[in-house]
Image (cartoon, rainbow, N blue to C red; front, side):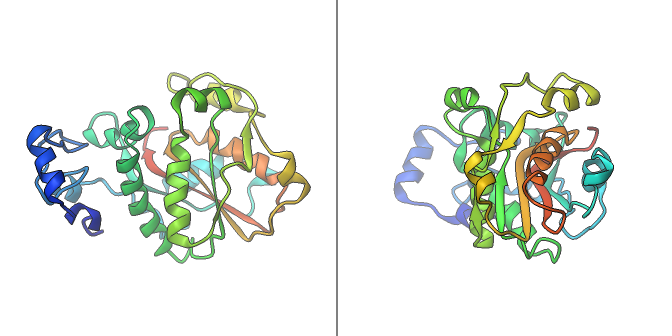
Length: 250
Protein backbone atom coordinates (compact mmCIF):
# COMPACT_ATOMS: atom_id res chain seq x y z
CA UNK A 1 0.00 0.00 0.00
CA UNK A 2 1.55 3.28 -1.10
CA UNK A 3 1.47 6.57 0.74
CA UNK A 4 -1.80 8.37 -0.18
CA UNK A 5 -1.17 10.62 -3.20
CA UNK A 6 -3.02 13.59 -1.71
CA UNK A 7 -0.43 13.70 1.07
CA UNK A 8 2.08 15.07 -1.42
CA UNK A 9 0.00 18.10 -2.40
CA UNK A 10 1.00 21.32 -0.68
CA UNK A 11 0.14 24.94 -1.44
CA UNK A 12 1.81 28.09 -0.21
CA UNK A 13 -1.37 28.92 1.67
CA UNK A 14 -1.49 25.61 3.53
CA UNK A 15 2.23 25.88 4.30
CA UNK A 16 1.57 29.27 5.89
CA UNK A 17 -1.36 27.82 7.82
CA UNK A 18 0.96 25.15 9.23
CA UNK A 19 3.13 27.85 10.73
CA UNK A 20 0.13 29.31 12.54
CA UNK A 21 -1.55 26.04 13.51
CA UNK A 22 0.69 23.00 12.92
CA UNK A 23 -1.14 19.88 11.77
CA UNK A 24 -0.67 16.70 13.75
CA UNK A 25 -0.53 13.03 12.86
CA UNK A 26 -3.90 11.47 13.57
CA UNK A 27 -2.17 8.45 15.15
CA UNK A 28 0.81 9.66 17.19
CA UNK A 29 0.17 13.39 17.41
CA UNK A 30 3.55 14.36 15.94
CA UNK A 31 3.71 17.49 13.83
CA UNK A 32 3.22 16.62 10.17
CA UNK A 33 5.80 17.48 7.54
CA UNK A 34 5.01 19.64 4.55
CA UNK A 35 4.49 16.57 2.35
CA UNK A 36 2.29 14.72 4.86
CA UNK A 37 -1.44 14.82 5.42
CA UNK A 38 -3.48 13.23 8.22
CA UNK A 39 -0.78 10.70 9.14
CA UNK A 40 3.01 10.79 9.32
CA UNK A 41 5.05 8.48 7.14
CA UNK A 42 6.28 6.48 10.11
CA UNK A 43 2.78 5.71 11.38
CA UNK A 44 1.57 5.05 7.86
CA UNK A 45 4.29 2.46 7.33
CA UNK A 46 3.34 0.78 10.63
CA UNK A 47 -0.44 0.56 10.07
CA UNK A 48 -1.56 -2.88 11.32
CA UNK A 49 -3.19 -3.84 8.02
CA UNK A 50 -5.83 -6.56 8.21
CA UNK A 51 -5.17 -7.86 4.67
CA UNK A 52 -8.49 -9.74 4.59
CA UNK A 53 -9.66 -8.63 1.13
CA UNK A 54 -8.04 -11.53 -0.71
CA UNK A 55 -9.15 -14.22 1.75
CA UNK A 56 -12.50 -16.03 1.43
CA UNK A 57 -12.17 -17.14 5.05
CA UNK A 58 -10.63 -14.85 7.64
CA UNK A 59 -11.32 -13.90 11.28
CA UNK A 60 -13.76 -11.17 10.27
CA UNK A 61 -15.80 -13.24 7.82
CA UNK A 62 -15.86 -16.22 10.19
CA UNK A 63 -17.18 -14.05 13.03
CA UNK A 64 -19.79 -12.44 10.81
CA UNK A 65 -21.08 -15.66 9.26
CA UNK A 66 -21.02 -17.65 12.50
CA UNK A 67 -23.61 -15.34 14.03
CA UNK A 68 -26.21 -15.84 11.30
CA UNK A 69 -29.23 -18.08 11.33
CA UNK A 70 -28.71 -21.27 9.34
CA UNK A 71 -31.07 -20.19 6.56
CA UNK A 72 -29.06 -17.00 6.02
CA UNK A 73 -25.61 -18.55 5.98
CA UNK A 74 -25.42 -19.09 2.22
CA UNK A 75 -23.85 -17.67 0.23
CA UNK A 76 -20.90 -17.17 2.58
CA UNK A 77 -20.43 -13.45 3.11
CA UNK A 78 -16.99 -12.08 2.30
CA UNK A 79 -15.56 -9.56 4.76
CA UNK A 80 -12.64 -7.15 4.77
CA UNK A 81 -11.23 -4.30 6.84
CA UNK A 82 -8.40 -1.84 6.33
CA UNK A 83 -6.68 -2.22 9.70
CA UNK A 84 -6.76 -4.10 13.00
CA UNK A 85 -8.43 -1.86 15.56
CA UNK A 86 -7.22 -1.69 19.14
CA UNK A 87 -7.90 0.91 21.80
CA UNK A 88 -4.37 0.25 23.06
CA UNK A 89 -2.73 2.06 20.15
CA UNK A 90 -3.23 5.30 18.30
CA UNK A 91 -4.72 3.73 15.17
CA UNK A 92 -8.12 3.74 16.86
CA UNK A 93 -7.97 7.52 16.37
CA UNK A 94 -8.56 6.98 12.65
CA UNK A 95 -12.19 5.98 13.13
CA UNK A 96 -12.70 8.07 16.27
CA UNK A 97 -11.69 11.21 14.39
CA UNK A 98 -14.28 10.46 11.72
CA UNK A 99 -17.05 9.40 14.07
CA UNK A 100 -16.71 11.85 16.94
CA UNK A 101 -14.56 14.77 15.76
CA UNK A 102 -15.96 15.53 12.30
CA UNK A 103 -12.65 14.86 10.56
CA UNK A 104 -14.34 13.98 7.29
CA UNK A 105 -11.23 14.68 5.23
CA UNK A 106 -9.22 12.04 7.09
CA UNK A 107 -12.19 9.68 6.91
CA UNK A 108 -12.29 9.99 3.14
CA UNK A 109 -8.52 9.49 2.83
CA UNK A 110 -8.51 6.23 4.79
CA UNK A 111 -11.73 5.08 3.15
CA UNK A 112 -10.00 5.49 -0.21
CA UNK A 113 -7.23 3.17 1.01
CA UNK A 114 -9.86 0.59 1.95
CA UNK A 115 -11.53 1.05 -1.43
CA UNK A 116 -8.25 0.48 -3.29
CA UNK A 117 -7.64 -2.75 -1.40
CA UNK A 118 -11.16 -4.02 -2.10
CA UNK A 119 -11.10 -3.16 -5.79
CA UNK A 120 -7.87 -5.11 -6.19
CA UNK A 121 -9.44 -8.31 -4.86
CA UNK A 122 -11.11 -10.92 -7.07
CA UNK A 123 -13.63 -11.51 -4.28
CA UNK A 124 -15.02 -7.99 -4.47
CA UNK A 125 -14.45 -7.09 -8.12
CA UNK A 126 -18.12 -7.68 -9.04
CA UNK A 127 -19.57 -5.40 -6.33
CA UNK A 128 -22.27 -3.32 -8.00
CA UNK A 129 -23.77 -1.51 -4.99
CA UNK A 130 -22.49 -0.08 -1.71
CA UNK A 131 -24.86 0.42 1.22
CA UNK A 132 -23.83 2.13 4.48
CA UNK A 133 -25.13 1.06 7.87
CA UNK A 134 -27.67 3.79 8.69
CA UNK A 135 -27.94 5.96 11.78
CA UNK A 136 -31.26 6.68 13.46
CA UNK A 137 -32.52 10.04 12.21
CA UNK A 138 -32.13 11.63 15.65
CA UNK A 139 -28.49 10.59 15.94
CA UNK A 140 -27.77 11.68 12.39
CA UNK A 141 -29.40 15.05 13.07
CA UNK A 142 -27.33 15.51 16.23
CA UNK A 143 -24.04 14.46 14.58
CA UNK A 144 -24.79 16.12 11.27
CA UNK A 145 -23.64 13.18 9.15
CA UNK A 146 -23.34 9.40 9.07
CA UNK A 147 -19.73 8.22 9.24
CA UNK A 148 -20.62 5.01 7.37
CA UNK A 149 -21.78 7.12 4.42
CA UNK A 150 -18.35 8.75 4.20
CA UNK A 151 -16.82 5.28 3.87
CA UNK A 152 -19.49 4.18 1.39
CA UNK A 153 -19.03 7.19 -0.87
CA UNK A 154 -15.29 6.57 -1.22
CA UNK A 155 -15.75 2.86 -1.88
CA UNK A 156 -18.50 3.32 -4.46
CA UNK A 157 -16.42 5.99 -6.23
CA UNK A 158 -13.48 3.55 -6.50
CA UNK A 159 -15.73 0.82 -7.92
CA UNK A 160 -17.70 3.18 -10.12
CA UNK A 161 -20.91 1.65 -8.78
CA UNK A 162 -24.08 2.90 -7.13
CA UNK A 163 -24.24 3.97 -3.50
CA UNK A 164 -27.61 3.65 -1.76
CA UNK A 165 -27.38 5.64 1.51
CA UNK A 166 -31.17 5.61 1.97
CA UNK A 167 -31.99 1.99 1.18
CA UNK A 168 -31.78 0.91 4.81
CA UNK A 169 -33.37 2.74 7.69
CA UNK A 170 -32.83 2.42 11.41
CA UNK A 171 -36.23 2.01 13.04
CA UNK A 172 -35.19 2.43 16.67
CA UNK A 173 -32.66 4.70 18.33
CA UNK A 174 -30.85 1.82 20.02
CA UNK A 175 -28.49 2.24 22.95
CA UNK A 176 -24.77 2.45 22.27
CA UNK A 177 -23.18 -0.96 21.70
CA UNK A 178 -19.86 0.04 23.27
CA UNK A 179 -20.38 -1.36 26.77
CA UNK A 180 -22.56 -4.36 25.87
CA UNK A 181 -21.43 -7.97 25.67
CA UNK A 182 -21.97 -10.03 22.51
CA UNK A 183 -25.42 -11.39 23.44
CA UNK A 184 -26.65 -7.99 24.56
CA UNK A 185 -25.39 -6.41 21.34
CA UNK A 186 -27.31 -8.95 19.28
CA UNK A 187 -30.51 -8.32 21.23
CA UNK A 188 -30.02 -4.55 21.11
CA UNK A 189 -30.17 -4.38 17.31
CA UNK A 190 -32.61 -7.21 16.59
CA UNK A 191 -35.22 -5.89 14.12
CA UNK A 192 -33.66 -2.44 14.39
CA UNK A 193 -33.26 -2.07 10.60
CA UNK A 194 -35.49 -2.39 7.56
CA UNK A 195 -35.43 -1.66 3.84
CA UNK A 196 -37.38 1.50 3.03
CA UNK A 197 -40.76 0.98 1.38
CA UNK A 198 -39.72 2.61 -1.90
CA UNK A 199 -36.90 0.09 -2.30
CA UNK A 200 -39.00 -2.85 -1.13
CA UNK A 201 -41.55 -2.08 -3.82
CA UNK A 202 -38.96 -1.77 -6.58
CA UNK A 203 -35.54 -3.09 -5.49
CA UNK A 204 -32.62 -2.37 -7.86
CA UNK A 205 -31.37 -5.44 -9.72
CA UNK A 206 -28.04 -6.27 -8.08
CA UNK A 207 -25.49 -9.11 -8.01
CA UNK A 208 -23.14 -8.25 -5.16
CA UNK A 209 -23.96 -5.79 -2.37
CA UNK A 210 -21.24 -4.40 -0.13
CA UNK A 211 -22.45 -3.30 3.30
CA UNK A 212 -20.05 -0.85 4.96
CA UNK A 213 -19.45 0.71 8.37
CA UNK A 214 -16.58 2.30 10.26
CA UNK A 215 -15.69 -0.46 12.76
CA UNK A 216 -16.50 -4.16 13.02
CA UNK A 217 -16.65 -5.53 16.58
CA UNK A 218 -19.10 -8.39 17.19
CA UNK A 219 -20.76 -7.99 13.79
CA UNK A 220 -24.23 -7.76 15.34
CA UNK A 221 -25.13 -4.42 13.73
CA UNK A 222 -24.04 -5.50 10.26
CA UNK A 223 -25.82 -8.85 10.65
CA UNK A 224 -29.04 -7.03 11.52
CA UNK A 225 -28.64 -4.96 8.35
CA UNK A 226 -27.84 -8.12 6.39
CA UNK A 227 -31.07 -9.74 7.63
CA UNK A 228 -33.08 -6.70 6.55
CA UNK A 229 -31.57 -6.84 3.06
CA UNK A 230 -32.25 -10.58 2.83
CA UNK A 231 -35.97 -9.88 3.16
CA UNK A 232 -35.71 -8.20 -0.24
CA UNK A 233 -32.79 -9.92 -1.95
CA UNK A 234 -32.61 -13.72 -2.41
CA UNK A 235 -29.51 -15.81 -1.80
CA UNK A 236 -28.54 -15.44 -5.48
CA UNK A 237 -27.41 -11.93 -4.52
CA UNK A 238 -24.21 -12.00 -2.49
CA UNK A 239 -23.97 -9.59 0.43
CA UNK A 240 -20.49 -8.87 1.78
CA UNK A 241 -19.22 -6.47 4.45
CA UNK A 242 -16.32 -4.05 4.82
CA UNK A 243 -15.15 -1.59 7.47
CA UNK A 244 -12.19 0.62 8.21
CA UNK A 245 -11.33 -1.11 11.49
CA UNK A 246 -11.66 -4.68 12.74
CA UNK A 247 -11.58 -5.34 16.49
CA UNK A 248 -9.74 -8.62 16.95
CA UNK A 249 -11.50 -9.39 20.24
CA UNK A 250 -15.15 -8.84 19.40
